[in-house]
Amino acid sequence: MTVVCLGAHILDVLGRPVTDIPSGQGRRVLDEIRVTAAGTAGGTAVDLAKLGVEVASIGPVGDDTTGRLLRTLLAEHGVDTSGLAPRPGAATPATMLPVRPNGERPALHAPGAMGSLTADDVDLDLVAAADALHVGGPDVLGAFTAEALPGVLAHARAHDTLVTTDLLSVPRPGLLDEFANLWPLIDVFLPNDDQLRLLTGLDDLQDAAGLLRRAGVGTVIVTCGGDGALVVSDAVVALVPAHDVPVVDTTGCGDAFTAGYLTGRLRGEDLLDAVRLGNAAAALVAGGLGSDAGIVDLSSTLDLRDRHVGRAPPGPDTVRRSATAPAPEVD
Ligand SMILES: Nc1ncnc2c1ncn2[C@@H]1O[C@H](COP(=O)(O)OP(=O)(O)OP(=O)(O)O)[C@@H](O)[C@H]1O
Ligand SMILES: [Mg+2]
Image 1 (cartoon, rainbow, N blue to C red):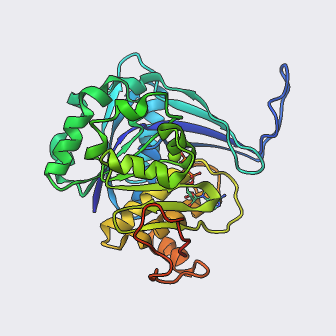
Image 2: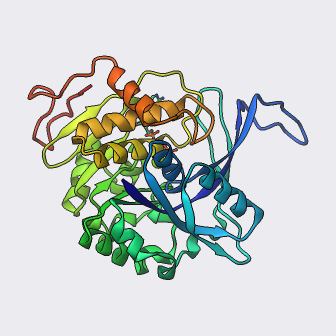
Image 3: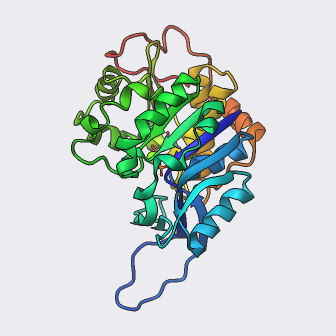
């Protein structure tokens, strides 16, 4: 199983617990501070590598110490970092995350080199040879997204490489139309619930997923935090519940979900089992600080999925074929 993760690779600096930012030159002592390789592409790459998938990263970084540290962190997990393109004079994308006691985390982000990826940075042979191409953060990649990404995705699909995509940021107005020529090239789109609502202007997640599917997306999987994930495909509309776990920090849960889902999918599992593997991987990440926390390997993640309370094969009562019916819960 090989996956190319293309897009946002970010160095995260996280601290917990942070209840407030001290005024003036005030000081707080924290329990824990960590530095991790993260971002919608980078965080997914690390989790995929932990799950035993061969991963290559493609994305813009600076030629600075932060970039070298990011590369080291990715490489320590076994990710091939030769496709990370260092931009002379630019800063590596980085984020500071003060994590609240309940696991929520505001993000203070410096994009640096993020918008500087070019078509020349993408090894099309690597894309063609991969089982999947995950594009993390097409909304923050600047001119690359309009100028080069449609060609990269078309190349992937022409070579039977599955295309998955997730957003990094809060969608800006007009993004739905901006991506009009990308949607038909995306097999699986995995935004979170807030992103999908803002992107489409629709409050109802099934309606919003339906809108994207009419725009050309194959399957929409909306992650809904502690509620789990809503799957909308040709055959299935279902809400797959999250695990009930003590939450330390939800940073990177969406990226872990993508990694678990993709691993299941590449193992040949059916859609809902792959989504359950996504929930299991994300639950592990929620239990520790940072987007690389919790996941150890594939077998322990599969065990967690298969022990998930109430898990049963979906039957006709739990999975319906209508995109408008209320999403039944499956577990
Ligand atoms: N409180 C929680 N309890 C259990 N599982 C959770 C919780 N929050 C998130 N998850 C798991 O993580 C998945 C992704 O979460 P979420 O929808 O918050 O992603 P996200 O906002 O895209 O995160 P990020 O962009 O930081 O990676 C959920 O579908 C769920 O499986
Ligand atoms: Mg996300």
